[in-house]
Image (cartoon, rainbow, N blue to C red):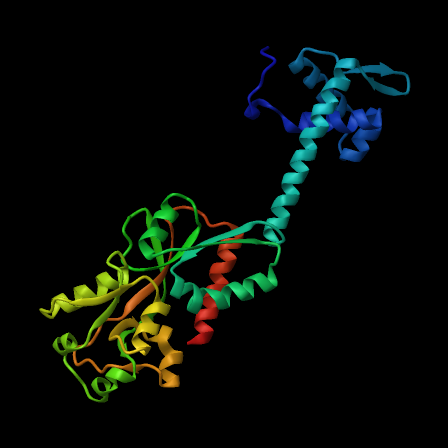
Length: 306
């Protein structure tokens, strides 16, 4: 018989019986510890010796003693069972969320306004789970998911690849906001075509939000004339507050400034469609225990804030 076995040919139970017998030096004691009969132990040892074509034990009057070959095998069997035990303990820790990692990605505004409350709760309750957070725009988050760099991502729909699946989280209303310099435009309803009278502050061209607003304007027969392109929500809000023009942002992300009276919402006659924020994952791929738990925490966090 070929002495090299693939893992599916190895009978782990034979090695378990060998290990107990070697440690106790007695077939009867090994049987008692394993809750099987003494003949079963003897038969298992004979099977293993036959498979390996080597004698593992010398039979003595009061038990058994390992042969030199048996001693050599024992070293590896002990290591193997120690590794298996460590693996079982690792799984137990993962189930208890006392180890593992959470890999999640989202854009800056989503992290600040949607993810952070859930991350705070998760980190407080499961501090031993390592959090790996990636900040990027929706298109890059989808690419990271496909590459297996993250497990879950918050994105704006639509998804760019059928290998990704999405679960709806919330719907967002986007609005145009201005600072006090253009407050008079917010005092009455205006048509979208009148936005040309105000400098437009939009996200950079590769942003999904930029594509969304340009598509909406184009459907109304309006070509957006962008004066200032910026890469972050905070910069859009800051420039709008300073009087540089009208910024297109999610209402929820500018709520504080609207309540403080440092920004003012333009009342556009034509309705702006709601946008969906979803959790994206790789289709037909199971989530880790930590990722699934965070999904639950995130959903609960968003529902409680509504």
